[in-house]
Length: 457
Image (cartoon, rainbow, N blue to C red; front, side, top):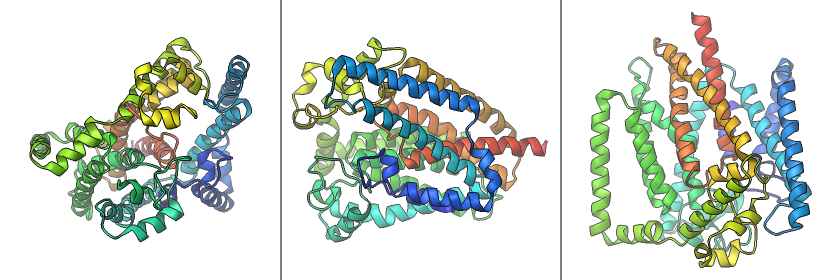
């Protein structure tokens, strides 16, 4: 079952708006069935997944704090289209906590040893290959007006997630309407976040691992290099600022984490690639038009920058506890610069509904305040220190299982700065099923690696 977690997580269509989005996707009932079956076969695992008393106390404190913030906001501002509302907002926050605990539970139950780690990694590579071949390649064809619309619309009808009140899907799917690839995500930038943050760090880590002694290791690395090149092309063809950003950051981390013997050649290859892209911008009209339209002349830039200023001002005015999960809309609107309001997207959508969080890191600060965010960073820092210590010990062995742990921990070292850097610029869909599964996959592997090293000592 561990090999089927990611494939179902990649199907984000929501079937109701009454629940938090994760509960409204097909992954939740499937994961629940997997979990119940596994616990039925191994009932002793129930003790491993029960929350500790300290965890329950933290949850309780957060839930009470959020209820107080929602109550204060309701008294101060009343009902507003810019917020979730008192009961709905508080209930949504409670569901978010349950979703995070459920993802933790899934990975705690299914990632138990080196064999389960290998199966999860194998499913990650296979899922990516299938996703690219079955979903992305046909969408690329449609984006160039080639006749694959029937296939892409069929898949979109089954699995594609849609934003409400948007005309992006009127022709049957996002790609058929917008002629931009999106996978099953609601828009192109979310596809970039999915491929870049979920799959990218693992791919970068695999190509940096010496695999001379691993059976089929060289073949795996060649496949992964092909996947990296294909993903880079997909990011560029997504026609999104996020895509160009992801290419640059993954390229940077590929060079930085490379062995010294190959770092020079990767740097040269990157420099040549950049020179080719710049030349194409100046001398190839199609490439020039793509960059002008999707990078240098985007109306969404005003909304993104204006929204970031609104979130920052919200945090400055409410620095300790934030304004509450879902309450930020009124404050963004209050602090939004006037110059950012003169575009069609703001006039037709954001001014009439809740202004979205377009910068996740500032959104966390505005919603939860410095106390919660700094506490989370402190916990993450502790996990990083543990990962560094166990990684140093793993470097002394060439056993296959310790090689697996090295790859995953190296990917963790890529994922953390990559995720934080992107979150400081744009949305990363941080609480989607694929992202949550990967967070707790890294966490579990660090624990397993520590146990493995202590047993080998």
